[in-house]
Length: 274
Image (cartoon, rainbow, N blue to C red; front, side, top):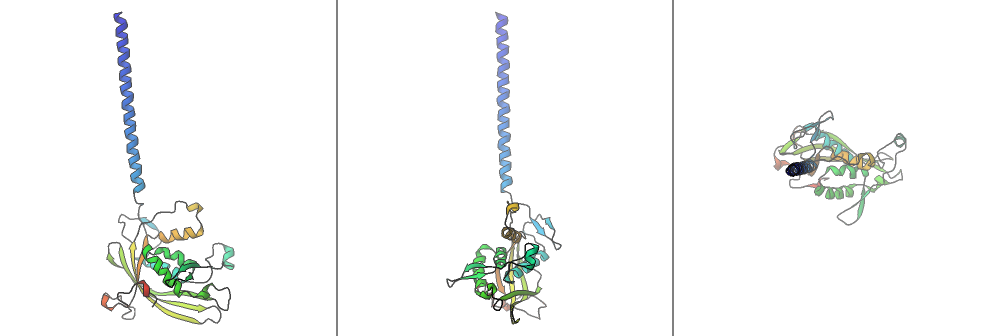
């Protein structure tokens, strides 16, 4: 009888130890799962690593989120403005067949302050995503007002083209952490396709640029050509948030540091084409 009781006690002790050990293991697993969940959440909220485009176009990781190479900033301004103000009436070729027979650009309808809708070129609309959101809407309205309807004309005798010819882009001047001022000297040339009559308008501007975050396209494989173009614009991690008139002194040889001599002091994008 005594031996039977001892066996029962030993069996009970083993079961108790086993139950406690199992419970402890479950508590440890639960703790590890909670810790893993917190780590995953932190990763999802973390900004992607900042890549800066160098002069040769190769992206490299940069520890400073606000640092940008001067030449990358100048290239950003140049390619954005050329895309913004080069109107051919056709869409960029996506295939070999479209090189010989380009598609007509139907344009994008934009509301103007007068309440009427006017068209801008598709390349202008895509390039406008390089502007800050609060600046973009007013800028597009101004560009719509200056875009001749003849750009979208199917009549070759009336059709017009526009091209921005850049003469010089000044080295970026840092005005704050992650913000730069860049001067550009250029001409906006509008030309009739038939006859070749040209209208040349000086386009000498100061661009205020700042560093921004960028998130890659989550569905790059299924994206349209238009979506890919927009994402490529934002991939430079820069945006233009203001355009001012630029005074040209000393025959383009230097960018004046005296703000009192700037053309149109106090004027912003509302008069950027004048």
